[in-house]
Image 1 (tube, rainbow, N blue to C red):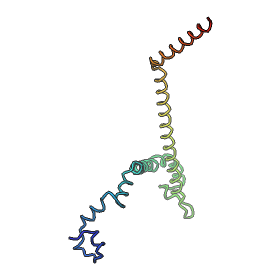
Image 2 (image 1 turned 90 degrees about the vertical axis):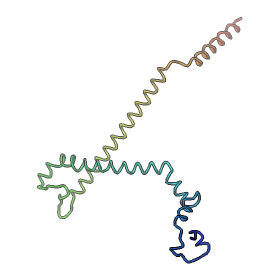
Image 3 (image 1 turned 60 degrees about the vertical axis):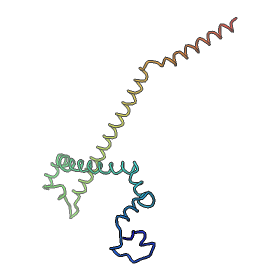
Image 4 (image 1 turned 135 degrees about the vertical axis):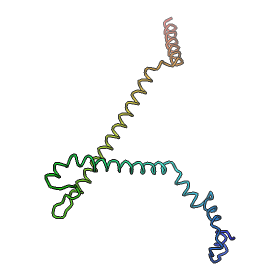
Length: 167
C-alpha cells in the first residue's frame, strides 16, 4: 500500500485502495504540524478549565432554571396569575404579545444574578476570614529566635557605643 503523503508527492490519482488511513493518522499525530499544535492548544490548562467551567455553568443554569420555573415563579406570581385567570405564565398575553414569557425570563435573570452575587459574596467573605485567620496565626506565633537574638545584639552594641562615647 502507498502511504497517504506519498500519493500527494507522486501526484497519483487518489484511489481508496491505495490509501493507508493508519499511515495518515500516524502522520497527523506526529510532533509537528497542525495536529500537534491543536493537541497542544487543547491540553493547555486554561482551555480545560474553560471547558469544565462551561459544563458546570450549564448544569448550574439548569438547576437555577428549574428553581425559578418550578418554585419561585409559582410562589411569587400565583396570586397574579389567578387574578388574570391564567394557568401558566407562558400563556399570559395581551393582544397577541406574550409578555408572560418575557416576565419569566426577567425573573430567571434576576434569580441567576442574585445567586451569583451571593456565591461571590460568600467566597469573598471566606477569603477575608482566611486572611484574618492567617494574620492572627502569624501575630500569635512565637518570635523567631534568630530575630530576637539580632535585636538583642543590636541593643547591646548601641549601649556599648553610648558607654564608649560617654568616656
